Image 1 (cartoon, rainbow, N blue to C red):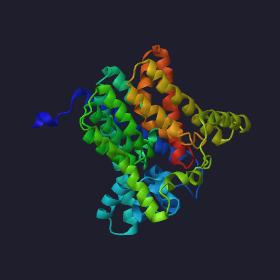
Image 2 (image 1 turned 180 degrees about the vertical axis):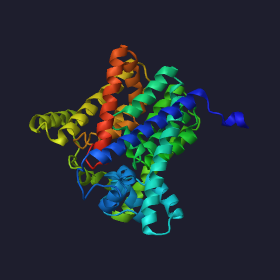
Image 3 (image 1 turned 120 degrees about the horizontal axis):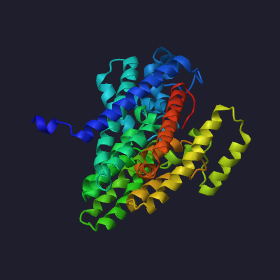
Image 4 (image 1 turned 120 degrees about the vertical axis):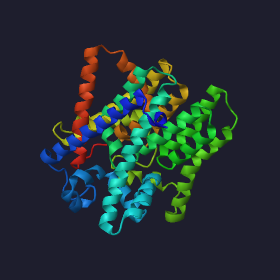
Length: 386
């Protein structure tokens, strides 16, 4: 029995990488709490401003959107919260309410359980991602991809009270089952993913492309389950607020830079160039806008680069269409966070990284790590990052 529980060498290495990343971010959080002044003292803080000040080591990881996930988990949906998909807060609510006796314990338990779900989901996602990558790439490229995901400047969101890690786990599992032609399980994971983030619905056309690549069509009808997750959430919104598209229509209210009408990508680039030319370099928002623009350029180019590197077409379609969906409301706001789940872009980045001379690899890794420290510290202290 013991031999089945024994971790393989790659699994052990991934676990060590993950726990090193997690401990590193905890150290960053402790230093940030001690040395970085709060961006706001009365809003955007996890657990509410009073609880945040009592235990910032815990509640800082629930800043900004984390507050909404906590609210949904504890109280259910309220006005304007329909933009946050239900699966992640449902999991939090189920476990937290089993363990809680009063409102304060419910808040603390919901926060702890949300963080456990996020971090456990990320670790499991990375283990399965390695298996998925090994189907096409060398061990070196697989590990490079995982490392680049973890040192990306906004990777701290995977360890925060956000649904990025859970969504990554669901999509990786869906892709892994799809690669093996198990359309039923791929569709089940895809269905749950489409009720976790809007990007999950992209898996429907992506897996149709994958079926054509494999020429395995038996059971392909199961793929119609994938949009069902989104469809059920839309029905819930129709019943509760009278608008099945509330998750989209409310985006311009919760995101200051977004607008309800569709905007083409060149217009977004023009808008950001204009903003950077008018905003003072010393304003904290400048670096956020700059990071958004860089992410908006790089993650458009990476799937194209991946095409020339012969990355699987279904992977590239997922990464490119997923990126374009994030831009249709005229902004790259939150794009540095949204792109975290598009693992095929990180494969392309890994292939590019592998060709760099050693000295440039070191500079690149040091730059990403430095940005990760800064962005993590700012987020935990109530500054808008992504």
